[in-house]
Image (cartoon, rainbow, N blue to C red; front, side, top):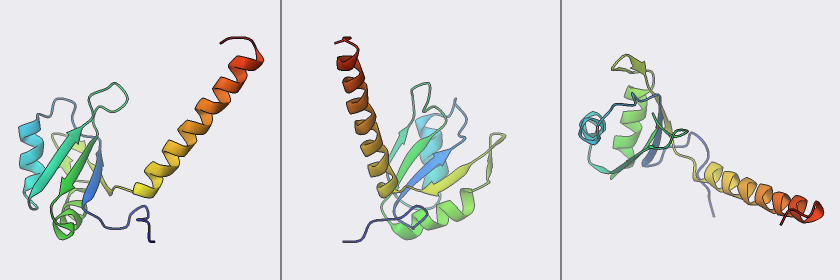
Amino acid sequence: MSHKQAGQPNNILFVKNLPYESTSDELYELFGRFGAVRQIRAGSEKDTRGTAFVVYEDIDDATEAVKTLSGFNYKNRYLVALFHSLEQMDKTAENLEARRAKLEELKKEHGLE
C-alpha cells in the first residue's frame, strides 16, 4: 500500500500566504485557470487564515498549478503552493491524539479532572 509523500504530485494542493481578503470567487478564478476545480476550502480561523486546500479534478492540472503558482505574486503576496501530503496529515493527527492522552494523564496525576 503506497502513501503519498510530501511533495509527491496528487490532485490536492495546500496553498499558503493568500491575502486574507480573497473571496471565494477570486480563488476559484485564480485556481480555475489551470483546470476544473472540485473544491476550495479556505481557512477562516485565526491560525488558518491565508491558507486553502484546493482539490482539482485532474492531477495534471494540479501539477501545472503548483509549478505556476509557487512564488506567484498575487495581490502583493507571494504564494506558496504545495502538494497536500496525506501522510503528514496522518502524523499530525497521531501527534495530537498522543498530546491529548498525555494531558489527560497529567490532569489525573494532579487531581485536575
